[in-house]
Length: 118
Image (cartoon, rainbow, N blue to C red):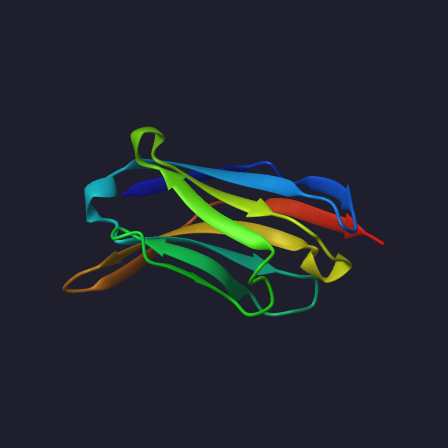
């Protein structure tokens, strides 16, 4: 089992920045990919960014150039630095941890609210 706890959400004006953190614990040896997803009101949950155990990084086109994912292995923490925020970035942001082996399993955090005012 893996537990994920997000923090760092809040209210920010358009153009501002926030940094989200995701503290992971449990059976982290089984985790290959850490990532962030988000869900805006009335919309489907969407993928935002991911970082693999080999430090390969990918971003959704909607956040590329504005968001940066990183991690601190010593702290088992993943970060999402969000710059140049837009009102359309308003959503609940979820941290995820993927175990990719014989079978696939994704763990989810409880989510943290990010609200960007115009």
